[in-house]
Length: 201
Image (tube, rainbow, N blue to C red; front, top):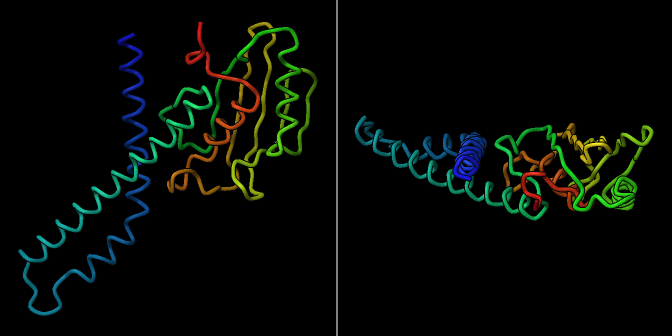
């Protein structure tokens, strides 16, 4: 149990740092503009310029860290609501998750297929026998989409979900990234799939 908590804490820390780097990168132009206008116009003095620079950098560091923390909270809520484990690379353009159905009753593969095909977010669905299904998925309100696939393993009772953001979607929580993970959460909820680690024994 302690090892699992330590692993979860480490993954959250890595995700927070990734989110912070993303938010900070988006803030760089604003910081540069503010520094340009904040520096004294008249008699230039290094001590005053240094204090002004330090104040601006500290303020934007705090703002970017708060933004990153909010982004992690949004991603964590999505993961919890969908039954997925929140990975450290949740901002990645490709998400691969080994899932299982909430119920292994007879016909679970057909049920998962039916729920996916019946969703308004799914289109261009193509099946490759009984083992694999490929599709496009709209994670947002617009027409832009991610590529996805479900690969079934009836013997193990598992499904491999593979989602890729190939169109550079806007992401979640203002981060500009994370659309693939958001789509994976939506697909898991619609099809009744969940991470084995989060599923009850």
